[in-house]
Amino acid sequence: MAGVTRREVLHYAAAGTVLLAASPAAATPQAMQEAIRKVVGSAKVMPGRMQITIAPLSENGNTVPCTVTVESAMTPQDHVKAIHIFNEKNPQPNVISIHLGPRAGKASVSTRIRLSETQTVTAIAQMSDGSFRTHSANVIVTQGACLEDTP
Amino acid sequence: MSRALISVPPKVKKGQVIEIKTLIQHVMETGFRPNSTGVLIPRDIISAFTCTYNGTEIFRCEMFPAMAANPFLTFHTVATESGTLEFAWSGDNGFSVKESAKIQVE
View 1: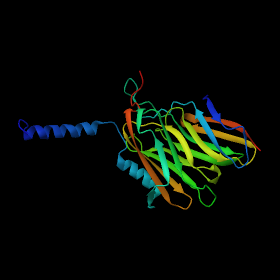
View 2: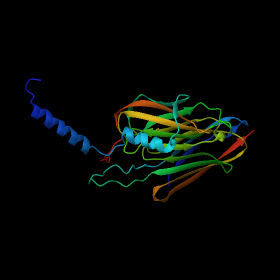
View 3: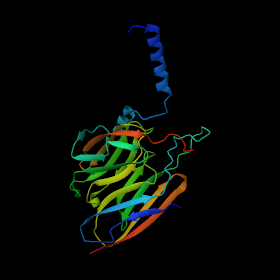
View 4: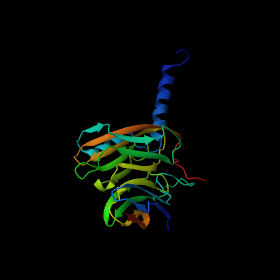
């Protein structure tokens, strides 16, 4: 580390902190965890038996196609009650909350979402027996959903 | 008035799981974007959507600003009887649109 003084290191470290603090409001992974907790309460969330399908590389964050499919017979005794989609780094952690019932026949929904930057998208499924399932997908976003007005 | 597009198979067999697609014209302004003078553009989104099949709710969702503009939704239902599917969107600034589609079950 020749040529770099302790003073310089401290200076750049402080500047970095300021830059982070000045970035626009964004949901953090913690905010996403809190939003998920609000939905699931104290219940355990098990991974598996559901799938969130998003292209791993998205060129335009303004419209990212996304499909969530949950393995379920969709009978009155055993069906998916709700599907929630959350993101880590948009200004808000929630994306959509979907309510289904045995009349759906098939627990599969598709939509288009906005992603501000490269991040993990998580889907939570609430089953009729009170259990929760989850699945996450990483998405690389080359051009994020714009935060400025289009000129 | 927003234009809504709905795709429902017009003729289906009883008990068949059908796919329903809906698309509605809307900017879905997030409320997080500043305009050219630096002032935030107020939020203007569709926040709720419901689909009923002969009066019974089969699909409902709450939407947040992270939904893309012109919200598109694909979901499924079991074709139980002939009748009408009704779709209702509602949101900020008194936004409300209703559409319906006929379905014939054999």
